[in-house]
Length: 451
Image 1 (spheres, rainbow, N blue to C red):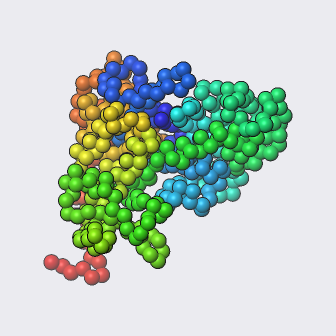
Image 2 (image 1 turned 45 degrees about the vertical axis):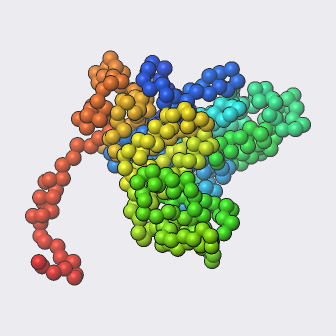
Image 3 (image 1 turned 120 degrees about the vertical axis):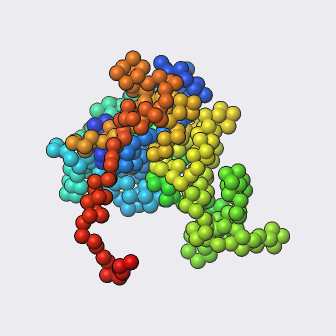
């Protein structure tokens, strides 16, 4: 489970932004929205869902980009902007490290994540010196790196040395042959071996100390943190390895489509024999006895909403099957609100969400601003200061019930949002601009004709 994610000096976030998935103890509503787990003797709770609101260009997508960028760095093991597509996702691969553009001083970009696996609670912190905005000549270096396991500090690495190394808390997970009384010498050796652009976690800590701990962390980032950048344009297909022939009809996805009211045709994933690429096809005719089907590329005949629904559902199903955290940009684009509300309710349902999966997405649709659907700490807002250009992330629960802007658990969240009681909304009027455009000299393109 994801417990929290923090980013600082990344794109539009100059100050630290905190995406907190730990439920506030003072809130009493919707207990079914809370996931409970146990690590050792400690009970750990996390929110099953979170929905992020804010105007265009406020920073909602940036927050998701930050998680995608951090995931890419951990899986790659260094802080270089490389072309290697470790995520097999063109958009995620393009999430390069970019600091806040309007900063007068050079500051590190930092990420901080806390999560649980079945065996451990982890916190991993990484601060990177990458220079100023698009400073291509700067020599990059890891300025700070820290790992906590079950709330015990394991190592602290600075730019020049490993300042701290204590492995007693993970003694049963150390590499074969590791001797605890050699920890001081190992720390010195690791300090001497530091590579400025490489993570200590995936290099010397993995080699000298604990491959099992690193493997568990890497596996969580790889399989249990699912990030969909620009989910409205994503096309998720089965991996090539599952194709026994040229086509697959995934029965569960087709059942979901039919339940959503899409009755036109079945859908099949078809592999091109020449380049092995996979496309989604709408099946017009199939002969199961002869194992043959006829269809057309779905992109040519299906609506954007249908294509998007068929594309995102494999990620939703995967998250529920694994107990993963699914974080998506524009997950609900072009999809009927009732479908999304049903998906949210599934993540809230303990009988279905048995592996403690989480769903986090940003949206412009106010229909989820409902106290019967989401807790106050599940509703997040991002707004951007017009003067400083900085994005700010906060939760509806940050407005205390006894403050100047009280938010009770029975409040009309949608109404209050549209009258700007919670911020993260832009009061706009294009009337004067349009009047000026209409009144200006008429523009005609080279082939335009007057009507």
